[in-house]
Image (cartoon, rainbow, N blue to C red):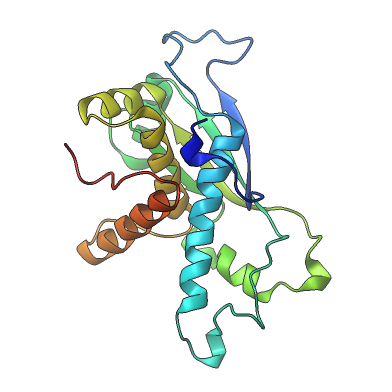
Length: 212
């Protein structure tokens, strides 16, 4: 883990990682040049969540949707969990084809814990409603992220990006998808990219959308 993403605060997000390159792996692809450890992943994901909490606390809202504030602080003792899968290209392609109808492997796939139609509360809503009485509640799962190291490495090389920085970007990108953000429409894409840029800046990582 680089100095830029060293752990300054306790993580808000815990991760469980499974990998195609485990101890008993029969992976066909060569071992990736670098894979992030849990601390790196937790720091990146927690930084994204802190960015959203900071935005909500700074945004005036009506009483029905009261912002986080000194009187209503985020429940920082509450934590969330994300399951991470480091997958080979074949597995990524299969998932991308099955769930998105695209017959190619991709850098990151996001699988939220619930469909939008189920009105599952966001972490911000849960932290706003949570108080001292439920600070010791169970960890809230956000969903699963499937990342493909071979795609991530090839993108970093082609775009002249630091490999660890690119991993950080895709972890954060995937997190925001789990939280309901998207980039299909122009305005939505601009909002999501801005969140990613600011989160990465807090980790000392430059704007990933400014290619050399």
